[in-house]
Amino acid sequence: MAKETAISKRAKISQAQQYVLLAVLGTAFLLGAAIVLIGHFQQVIAFNSKVISEEDASIKKYSDVIKGIGVCKKPSGDVYTDEELKKCVPDAIEVSSIPGTLRANIINNMAKNEALNSVPKEADSACINPSTGKNYTYEEMNELYNKAENSEQLSAASTLIQSCSALRIIPDALPASKNEEALLSSLNKIFIISKLEPESLRPSDSTGNASFGTNLGTIGVRLSIPENTDTATTVKVIDNIERSIREFNITRASIEWSENNTLDIQAQANAYYINKSSISEVIKTLKPGDQK
Image (cartoon, rainbow, N blue to C red; front, top):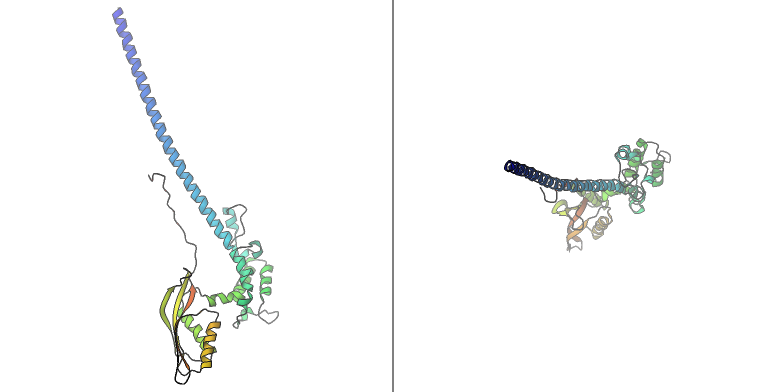
């Protein structure tokens, strides 16, 4: 009887040990799984934090571009909210509400630049003030802009300033496209003003990007002054080229005295144009630290 009792106790102890071993194994498994899940969640949290940080940086840059250009009024916080962007109407914004922006500097400073405005205006009925019968002054155009009561009036006043103020000179001085025909036409007009018909005007192969600006392109042109042109007329042509609102940079020239004491000039020059600037969209790919 005692022997059977001892065997029974031993069996119960062995069974209890099995339960304890299974419990230990189960606990170890759960602990390992918990450690793995914790590590995974830490990676997910770190990656999501990285994504959120990049999103915030993108929103900040986007807002800075809008503020710098002057498309919308300054946001109430550091960045624009969706509601602020929905309410933004560029044509309905007064310049006085966006000080220091690109738009404000163009309208307040460049549009009334005396040096640019000194260039003679072409006849344009749209620039005539019906009240005075004369060309609009910058002050008159600016007054129309400031007194505009709706977006249509603001847009019309803005167009008037672009077309009739000193800003009108900028596209002539530095066009926004590579247009060889327009360049030759401008140069031909200089010869006409100088009362001389050029011997030849033609594009040159000397084109490309100007070294002092990656966004600045060049157009090459060759010109020659007819033989036996009197010296006074030749000098007048050169003087008018120098005075032109459009830059003609002489890169190579051949100047010879002819037998009858006149100048024979063959020259190659570069004129410039500005490539359109745009805001490029950047796609950034983010990966977790171990790139898995």
